[in-house]
Amino acid sequence: MVNLLYTIFDVVKNPLGSNLCRGEDYICIAKLYEEKGDFQKSIECYKKAIESENIKEEACIKLSLLYKKLKMWDEAVSMWMEMAEKNIGTLIALEELSKYFEHIEKNYDKAIKEVERALHILSLKKRLLNQPDDKKLLEFKKRLERLKDKRLKNKGQIFFNVKNI
Image (cartoon, rainbow, N blue to C red):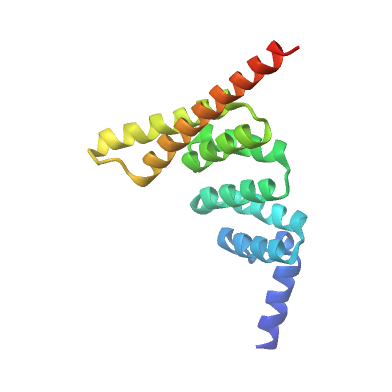
């Protein structure tokens, strides 16, 4: 029993140097490090977990959201773009890109583009499976309308500011 505890301690202390870890283990250890505030080790463990095909999507999502939490925007955006391109958690990636473009860059056109990509995917899925609108589709439609309103108000504000110069 004591040997088992030492083994677990060693694996948690140095997961990347252990030959005992599997993909799921790396995610669990990454969460431990994240909760502890050791974000660099958490990132390393999530990256290692991404190498496991069976949990790649979960690891990509968790790593991208950690980047977002840490305001590591270049890494987060790069990851979301790659995820969308490779069809790994695509809808989450497109939603996060849309939020980034809306709230961080204040680029409503880009945000709208990402929402439209998500709506296209969801519409295809709906037609192929002959299903009614699901919650996610309705959420993206609402987001699109809100973004279009924001874009219109923003363009009106720019016009108003230029006119007063």
